Image 1 (cartoon, rainbow, N blue to C red):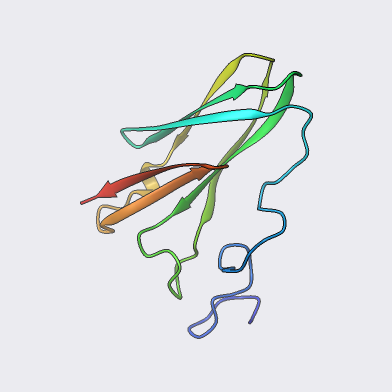
Image 2: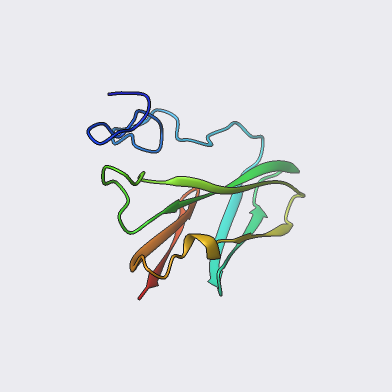
Length: 126
């Protein structure tokens, strides 16, 4: 596999890797735990991050996108399209918004998937 993609080789970065991983992209150690809830509203992905642990903590919220043709030779399985680091006190929640309207190409019909940690949203473009 080559480092940079061309017509025959997709490239060997996290965007094209198909195998099992030991540590997923964005994996990190924290002294607390967080819960995520996502919703899609008019070109914006809104993420509510709740601190469900026993200590205050910071977390980097990473938003990934998978296009309808994800995984073919020219389109990666997922792309990091937004991130924001936030501080959340114990028992509190923070709202993070990502404008994804640029990713929702009207000429690209199908299911777009937006993912944060173990939460995902599928958005159909007709």
